[in-house]
Length: 239
Image 1 (cartoon, rainbow, N blue to C red):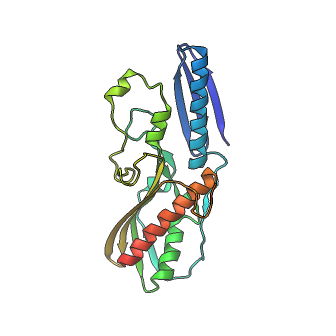
Image 2: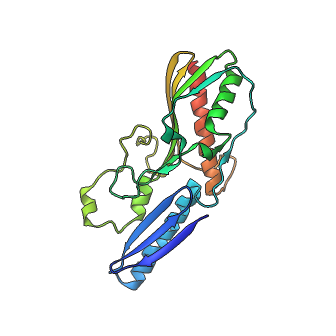
Image 3: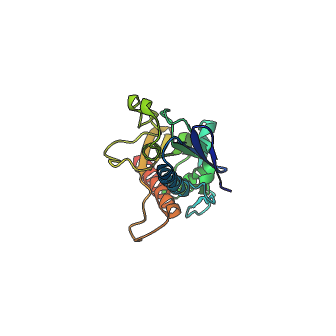
């Protein structure tokens, strides 16, 4: 369920959007003229609504993957850190390097990405015996777009330049995202039959090429599917 509240205190507005998977805050300066306040508020709420659809916090629906269960003897050893299995918005503080970056937990796909990976590897590499996973995680980096939308960030903002998180799991390159749109980033690391691998893929949520129009949910699903396809392709190619 999505809950939105708007409160006015002595010198500020605070818009809060909360759901099971995410929460966003937009502080506004209330010392401005009424028309300006209303305009900024409308833009902020519109931005929150767009981000909410893409991240799935409005009527959360996981990505349904095409999946055939396997009885393969492939042994999958999941050694990921616990937090990689859980959804989390890394920071709500706009000056933080982790602001606007969301980790997507295992519940974002059905089946979960470990089961899907096992099925795909078993199908493509039937002789594989052991898959050890040390990192397998997806992040949605919305930082730049959220900061651009929050225009009342104060004069101190000019002293802060931290648009890209230094965390290797969440950052992107200018070539991957020149316009700095919201972007999904997936990383898969581990060993396949004793051979180490480290693979990364990034996708901006957009409509599939076969569709002229689609909603945020479909664009998100398409990005997740493309990232999984790329990770598995390069893992199999290396194997």
